[in-house]
Image (cartoon, rainbow, N blue to C red; front, side, top):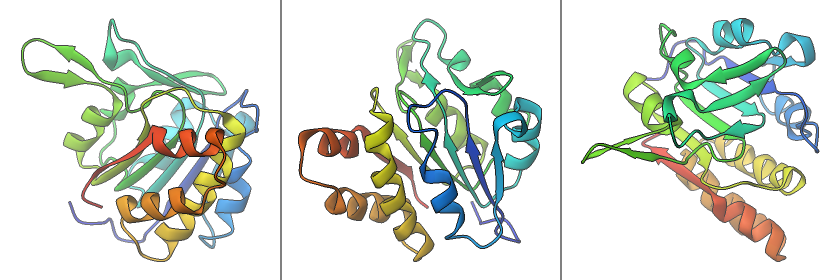
Length: 189
């Protein structure tokens, strides 16, 4: 997948986070003039409009994995859940997407040889790279990880390289280290 022209960044801050998505304002400063959606602007229809064709999307929101029906796993927005199926309505999925959310990399086995979840839905839609968490994470401990991750991304590193470097920059306590290792980079971007 080629990056979209224009290089638009979209940063979303969902409701109810203990950290209030504290990384979003700081991350916004790295990208010049990103689209920032928060509070009432972080409604599902608006979020989808802005995500469509974005070069980079960062979503700080509560994530919920549905093992019984993985395509209904969701990210909480101001007006309710943004579900996996919603991403299928996009003309062009974001080129890179960072999900600062719990359980967004979890997958459920469907049939003999298929895994379903948010990540497996995004990659076939044209997203070249995803960073997501396979476990519940501490909202406050996510903030330094995301700041370090975006430092690497804005310097031109791939998501995997930026995540590796971000983990190395975290404080050495168990909470920050576990948070760093809960996240995985998927794809080639």
